[in-house]
Image (cartoon, rainbow, N blue to C red):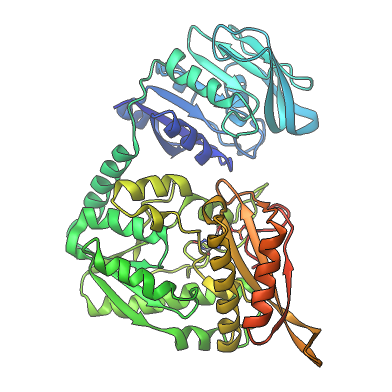
Length: 510
Ligand code: XMP
């Protein structure tokens, strides 16, 4: 099968490169930049991509590769840091830019015969760099320039080595996909043969080999990701997968019961149910800090998993539905992608785990997980449900989580969902949910003064959860939801609408 290897120099967009390549129906694997030459020779990919990265090629300790890579006869595309590395290793010169360039730029296409084939003469690209290529290596041509970057695109068509200073993998680079497909199809000669069923096949094989005869436990959360992950593992290890479905008391109204019914009716999974509402609530008593809540919930899950694993001998693995956005938002790295919050299934887990982790969805985005779900026979309606965070309603109750506050939020949230569905907006939105604030406000009901809690409505549109826009909901809908909540949910006398985008806010409030 055709294969591309992406060498990772630490850019926050490396997975996005892989995703774009998958969209072009080509199999891509990401490996650390320092894999050996013999490994690359053995793998013999049809193309190599050098990712971006936060460092400078001339810095001490900067991640470098052997220049011999350029003599393997494999076409290479360097992106941002990757392009600078090509220049640096092949006799060019990279220097700090006078001004860090961040954001949109206009690419002027000089030569359309190679990488920039079929592009508009002026094309919008997205830049994020503090260095630039001052002198290009011998036998390279500059084929694209921007106002601040002379060597925005460099090409050596004889050795098939290419570099772009901007990021073709991000959607802000309007013709980025065209550039990647020129590289892959026109210049490296690959064929579009890969599909999500290949992904499934490969993952099942990989898990089979990894797990051997051991047992695996998987936590089902009631959502899409953990079910898809469990079904993949189930294909690989069959009855040696034990699914634990913990009722932590932090789910939406009716979510546990509905999901359990679906899981039981279909799929043939071996499911153990555990009632642990009181345990989670007790552990969360008096806790206000969002990060502490996330850690406590992660730890409580793991304690329960450990207890259960002891009952079934031979459990060596824990399968989780971690997806790629969970990974980036939880990764405490230097540079631009500092840790935002500890997604409980990655950053919220204790550092020492008694299991080895299986995370078959770790490199996928939500829509790819949904495609995989369809492939696995999951109903479209179940797959289209909105994402729900692992720590559940605990991160939508600002301040202390108590049974009373949970019950208020659940009712308010349920009204919101009912009305959103009635208005035919559910599928259009990435998420719609209610948040309970830790403040009270004065109101009037009948002739009585009230002093009660405030509910926030959060409705967002998004492609992948990494950025989001607040949804301009119709006034009638907002009015209906607000009126129903204050009338039907005891303890709430005010409803407000969240009109912030991500960034600077996040989607969830904690
Ligand atoms: P934020 O709030 O960071 O959320 O903008 C981005 C997306 O991730 C979901 N989310 C989580 N998903 N475990 C998950 O599986 C978590 O701990 C978690 N926290 C946030 C969130 O609902 C949104 O879709």
